[in-house]
Image (cartoon, rainbow, N blue to C red; front, side, top):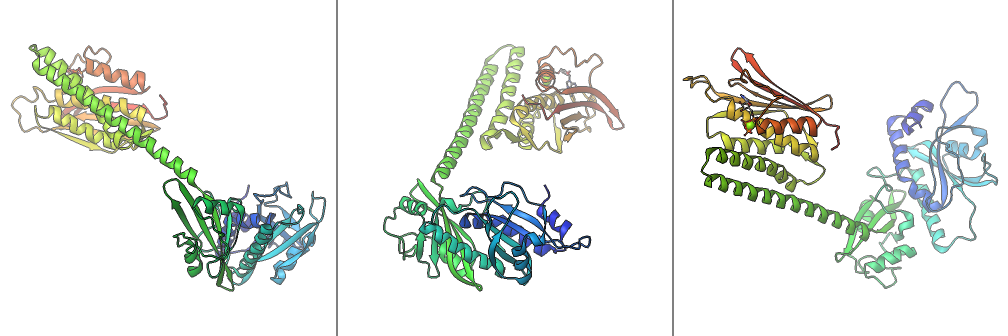
Length: 494
Ligand SMILES: Nc1ncnc2c1ncn2[C@@H]1O[C@H](COP(=O)(O)OP(=O)(O)OP(=O)(O)O)[C@@H](O)[C@H]1O
Ligand SMILES: [Mg+2]
């Protein structure tokens, strides 16, 4: 389906500000359709040389939320001969409201029709057409009031004071006519309130009759009406009572010749929504708390392992326990990050920073090595981030631990550098761990590691994350070293 801008460009010579004006009208006019209980069309004259006759094109169509629609067809983008829509032509050319009846395709009866000229900077740029469905008996009192507000808004459309420059007055989250309507006069006194609106006032503890009173006189502390009256702009304010009741007030100023003559106020009881929000927030806090506890427990386990390592007599046992301790801590790092930012996804950069600190903490005391991190992987799903973090911790530890032992003999000039490059390429998270150390031994093979560290890494990268890992000795002018390249697909849902 063509957009409004495309239709305007295709059929008319209207400029950008005029198109914006029509855009704003369409963003706000569900309010008008509801107040009029009517289908609405926005039409403008086709500006083309190919036709001898005059045509109108439909730029927009709106159905009422509170009545069944009169027109089942989607008319947007359709063109119509002007003589079939004489009222539209008269409104467009004469620039005044034209009321009458029309015959419309696929509608049995003649349709009572209003044609409202839409002005922008003094010129009629389109016609807003109201097509009224069959009335159901006589209109109730507040239906009549709706219609009188609708008329005032139509006059504003002709005067170019509606739609508002600042913001649209209808949209997701905003109260609608069906939610409840209160009309205030120029003095801020209630003229009428619909039954739903009266219910909302009851929820705020107001049981006295609202008519003829201002919000202040009713005991409501709110600036919403005063601000609309004073500045002539739409306003929005939530009025709370205790923790349980929240009513949203949306003030739409009504203007006559640029003077504010009243405020149409849509009210909606949003207490349930607020309560839901609170539940969601509580749940988030609970998840955060769980991660926090998991992290604490892992830290307890790691200190137990450390204690036990210290007590053991055999060197080999000591080393094994210390290694286990380090692994537990690298998992704790991930939960630490999640306890701050719970969710399905996590900023991997934060985990990397903690991991580097952890590695530095554990092994750098042995020999000075510089760890440099380049790039980052952005936001990753947590079920990918956790195993990847554990694998990277192993590889960084290996580089710091093995690359520089027995290296260069007496050459103390050599500065050990471990570089971690992180980037995304072809939907894959890539991590390159490079050191400028002694390189891998001749007999080294990634495929037959007997040691635990690389077995864990292989298992995580290949079996768990469906990724690839390569380890190679590299040679360059300033010495050699080892390059480990890990690639993990981002799309894998675990
Ligand atoms: N960056 C590196 N530079 C040189 N040698 C390395 C490097 N990474 C790994 N190695 C060699 O590969 C071997 C296997 O590593 P692996 O991590 O599996 O075991 P480990 O580090 O010895 O023990 P652990 O199970 O505690 O990790 C190491 O012992 C080391 O000889
Ligand atoms: Mg290792």
